[in-house]
Structures are given as C-alpha cells and as structure tokens.
Image 1 (tube, rainbow, N blue to C red):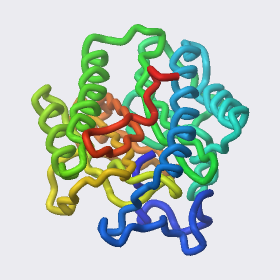
Image 2: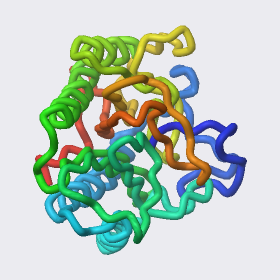
Image 3: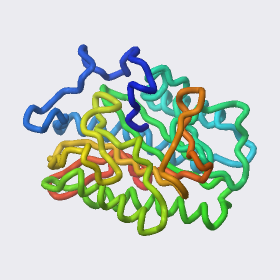
Image 4: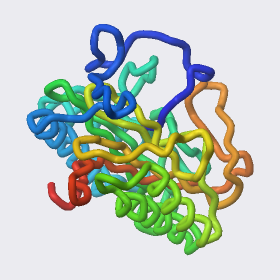
Length: 285
C-alpha cells in the first residue's frame, strides 16, 4: 500500500503494530529510519512470506467471472489461516484486506461484489500481513484470463522491470535517489510515465514508516544513505499515458485522469551490507 496523505484521509485509529505514540522504533543515527535487528528481520521474513504466499495463490486462482470481493474474501481467509491479520483492513478506515484496482484504477481500489473481472483486465492486487509485531507489504499486476492486449502486456512488463531496476540499486552505502533514478529512467525510456503522488515507504512495526521511497527524482526526497537493516516497500506505479491522477468520490480509489491503463508492482526489501534480500519473493514460497 502506498503512502497516503492526511489531505485524503483524516487522522483516526492507528494500525496494528503502532507503538504507544504512533511512531516506529527509531535509530537516531538514521534520520528517523528504523533499523531492524536480526530477530526483527526474521519476524519480517515471516510476515512477508505470508503476503508472498497469498499473492502467488491469488495470481493462480484469478479468472474472468470472479469479483474483486471474491479475491478479498480469499486473501483475508488465507492471511488469518497463516496466523496473521490483514494489514490494510481498518487502516484509516479502509474496508478490505486487499486493494484491488482494475485497468485505469491506479491504487487503493476497494473490492466490490459488483465488480466482475473480465478477460483482458489489468488487475492490481496489493495486500499486507501483520504477524508477530511486523508487517509485510507487496503488490502484483495480473493479466486476467492470461490474455491482455499487446500494449497492456508491455505496460505490465515494464512496471515489473522497473521494480527490479530499483531493487538492484539497494545496497548499504547507496542512496534512495539511486532507486528513484533507476525506476524513472527505465519507465521513461519505454515511453511511460511514473505516478508521482504515491510512493513506496519504510515498513516494519508500522505499515508505513520513514522514509518515503520515491519513484522519480525530486527535490522533496532527502538523499538518504541506505544502511543495513533498513526495510523498504519499493513500489513503482506506471501509467500508459499521463502521470496525473484523481481520487474518486469514495475517497480511496485513485484513477488516471486520461483513463489510460496503470500497472504496479511492489516488494518488501531488506537492505543488507552487500546488497538486498527480497522478503516478499513469491518464487521462494
């Protein structure tokens, strides 16, 4: 799930895993960014593995004729069966366990029993799991029915490639701007645009922690040096047309202003001394 602004969502109850003052545990030498210990990282591996398992299963079962509410029900059941709770459900009042965003919907789509999936839809499924005090967070884009247009297939491919281009920059001593630049360059080289209003984020005891992980170069992002033990949710959102978006009247669902398609991928990633570890890697479940 992306960082969301208080302009969109009023302050309300804290997500599970918040400390008494609503802030993550901090390392004062890391600009307010939480540095996880070895035991904490192990717990994050477990939460992220639950998320990876659920998304892998959803990618397998999704088919035309299902509704996004069907997928939400499945995800919540599986998350709870594995001993976790859904990170998203109730978060600032969000009503579901997954975000299910279809075609021109960019992020934060609310699952709906009336929203029937059709062959050729571009479906983004984003979910999180909270277990043993830590969150995992990940997103995939699914070509419903395994058959989309060539243009849609290319968009999905580039969005996933952009995620891994960003992840390849993760290493202690590198900077957040290295991630942002790698994502932005790959997306623009392929003729697409990066959504700028929504970013990745730190993740751990809280679903959203410092730092914001932008997908484009910006003066608003401090050039934070990466340190071993940081855990980041890296999540490029790529539009086929304009980068600009708007929020629907439900105050959650974000859509492209030009009604063009959007694709998104996300992983929870651990910064290590020599590189990175993808905690939500679906190939490992």
